[in-house]
Length: 375
Ligand SMILES: Cc1cc2nc3c(=O)[nH]c(=O)nc-3n(C[C@H](O)[C@H](O)[C@H](O)COP(=O)(O)OP(=O)(O)OC[C@H]3O[C@@H](n4cnc5c(N)ncnc54)[C@H](O)[C@@H]3O)c2cc1C
Image (cartoon, rainbow, N blue to C red):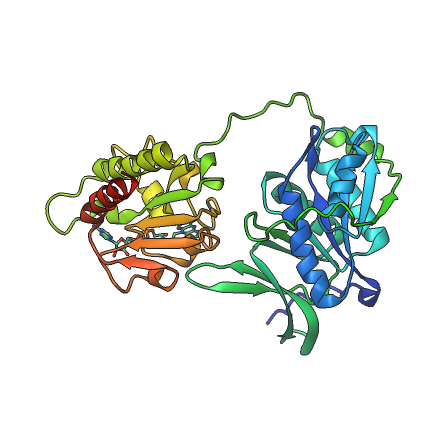
């Protein structure tokens, strides 16, 4: 039988300290999710008694941007400011981030699980010969027994993420440092801005190697139009439609009617209460590509682990069972109203109110009762 592959441990693991984040600053824009990463790092730092550092890379980065990272919770900011880094380039950025981390040795390094974080974090992890836990929604301290080496590792970071089926997985990087993860946007609230906070600014001179610059050249940058369903991220009231739209207790199901009913409720609320409303869907409904819905219920409207994370004041889940992959996308909703013909559907664990009724009956009733109240 072949021997299990055991990579050598990070030789000086004990010398690693502090929790770092990567601040995304692209084309003059500071991505607000970087503040969420700092909030996540603060949580880890509070459990480990460490400091929070953040690395920002770019060219002519304004002082106000650097200060804002300290006001939002960083103890120090590592600034790599260099003409060659003016534009985001996954290879040069990964080389800088890995190089700075190799020299300064952070204990944990948190990226945002967005387009840039997903692009650069694995490259950094690979260069540092360490692991990467993607799409984390929480962090805990834990211990893990590794049978391969017959050793228990204590005080390691449990990087919590949704797994397949209905499980939550805790990913450990016990033997390598730094412990790198990407954090799903929407799970850590940015800390309030405190302009009296003081921190250190560490300017690092970094010469990008000539061959790194040659390997990847940016010829043109173009911005995509706003993604469909982007309003889900900021809406106060969201209706999510699920595969329940293809079943009806009495009569023929009519998914287009279900969508129209949801839209009617949203229009009522947005016109009368001036609240931001949006319509989302479960992955099962998006993938079903149902005639009459598929032009509107697109992948951009998917809520959940592989879709968007929403945080409305009210979320109405109509005909959605409540699989864990859906739940992780709605966990930050203040109130959840579930409309489901099955009183034991898993969504009930999270629902503030459970309406045990056919959505084709419940949505018109909801509309009428809201209309009466608003009148
Ligand atoms: C790696 C991975 C990633 C995933 N990512 C996501 C994700 O991001 N988002 C996501 O949503 N899912 C995701 N899924 C899929 C997820 O596991 C579920 O399959 C999916 O969420 C189920 O969708 P649903 O609730 O609409 O359908 P179903 O599970 O079929 O549930 C339909 C519900 O509607 C109820 N119902 C039926 N008829 C009616 C009616 N007339 N009125 C009212 N209620 C009715 C039923 O009782 C049932 O509870 C992922 C799965 C995997 C493996």
